[in-house]
Amino acid sequence: MSDEMWALVFDRSKDVWEDSKGLRKVRVSKPTLDEKKNPLDAERVVVKVLYTGVCGSDKGIWFRNAFKQMIYDSLDEENKDYRVTGHELLGQIVEAGSLAQKHYGFHIGEIVTAESHITCGKCLQCRIGQKEVCQDELIIGFSLDGCFAEYIKLPAEVLWHSDPNKIRKQIGAIQEPFGNAVHACTKVDLRGKSLAVFGCGTIGLFTILTAKALGVSKIIGIEPNEENARLAERIGVDEVIRFTPNDDWRSDPEVVGKVREFGGDGVDVTIEMAGYNSSVNNAVRSVRMGGEVVLFGIKSGDFQIEEFSRVIVQGITIHSVIGRRIFETWNISTNLLEATENRIQEKIFDVILNQGKDTVVHINDYDPEDFEKRITTHPKVLIEW
Image (cartoon, rainbow, N blue to C red; front, side, top):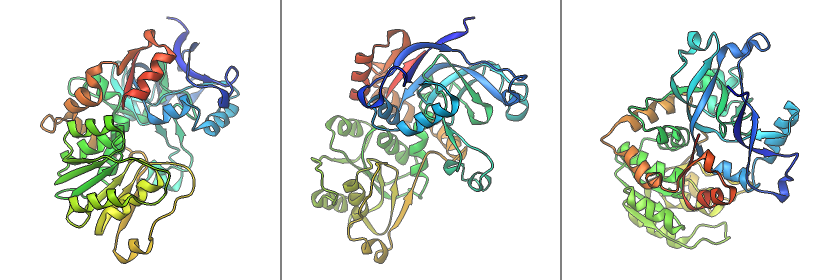
């Protein structure tokens, strides 16, 4: 077996961050386990990658508008120039450390996906069950080599079993981002509630599917992109508000008015997935008195909350969500995906993944120009290895 493999990388020795884009397809060293040189390999595995999902954060690396410092700092620590990117995966274990099965129950041949955040296990947050906000985490594909490669070495503790007889392999590869939506939807009790989802991109679409399965009474989506709006309608949203965004940080009175009318006098819950200041204000102003706002979308910089006193005097609760609760969210996600009556898998594959047409590209067919077109056209793209 060759000691090298194909991978997609950002290489700072060949590309200046500010003057480049894309990922290079190159041959790099294949990861191996060597417990004599590194005793920690006893609890690690090597996974042969089958499918990887392209995340919005991967697009941030592709277009060089996010994560530079994290990547550069980690490369300095490792004294290397390239980073294998990617963090959403499905693969098969081909090599396992001596303690991987004993401590975590994973064995060679098993099909697995993985949590992308490798937590320290020692900080206060880890010790009290808040691993999603670990103080000293490493993130696959950013602070260490990721899964846009034929093989990846991972700690067995981040693996999650995925049964290909119950969860289609292409969908198994995107359980990590699906878990973001599950975390957002389980932050509050949605049963019998009216819900507005601000931003119907990939995670917003997952949120609509999850909320329906968890018993929400009715859902309205707010989305300026016509293609995303159509996808939201196809997966079963009750109504979509289309609008033209602008640069104002304030809420849009027309959008807020329509959402409040949909809910009677505001919806019970709003989930913000876009991350823009105006969208956050739309979400806050669209919820009823005593309602709840869940914030997931991320943009950098300072934000302003319009008429902040309203949040207090009307008893509005604001929640922030990051990543997935490890592994509570994963367990809920698996149950939702394996259940056939909610048709979540069917809708993800048929609608969001367009039945694999133009959304799944084999690494042998990787062409940067073609790949960029795919990731800017479709809400989700997969790489087959």
